[in-house]
Amino acid sequence: MWLEKIQHIATLARLRYQPGQLLIISIDGCGGAGKTTFCQALALEIESWAHPQVLKLDDFYHPLTPTQRKKLQQRQACEGYFNVTEFKKNILNPLTNGVKVGYKPYDWLGGESNQTLELLPFGVLLIDGVYAFSEPLRDMIQLSIFVDTPEQLRKQRLLARPQLDTDWVDHWQTTESWHHQQQQTVSATDFVLLGS
Image (cartoon, rainbow, N blue to C red; front, side, top):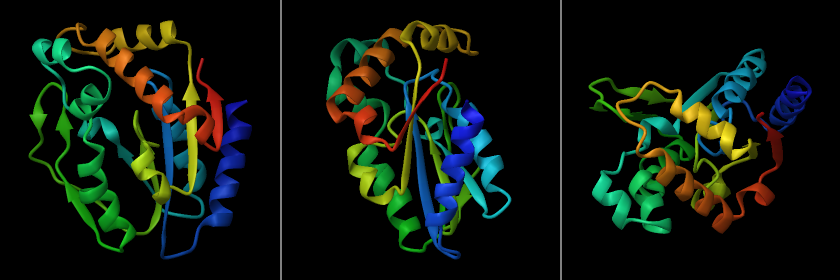
């Protein structure tokens, strides 16, 4: 079922793509939904006609301390995990204005990387991650996908990832659910896919 959807979305992207320009596709959904798997498959489909770049929002998330998790809820928690204003200012604004962007990924466990990754202002940019279709970014995005997966399965996948502890998972899931409800992400996206 995903294969047909991927081919359909890739066809739409090709129709909207202008050579030498940047086409942005967001793949949103909650943590553990299957966004990255879908994103990788879509990138392979696009490779035949354009240069796909995958931008992982994992590189921009910041963990919250136990004290912060108790103190910060809803909007403040969202902003703590991911600063959408800074992301738009430093990454998407320059790219959509034709400027190459470099950034240092932030690793959830290891902190900021010494490696600089570069994004080019042309081709197809796939934004993979929770908050990828946040309201402040929507005017820059040409196609949007939401991967919808039951919460219990998502939690199992999150808990299975390599990590020092799992105390953050409940707070993260509560925060992302609040975000998507507030911003009505599911109804705003072009496509909703089942990730189970």
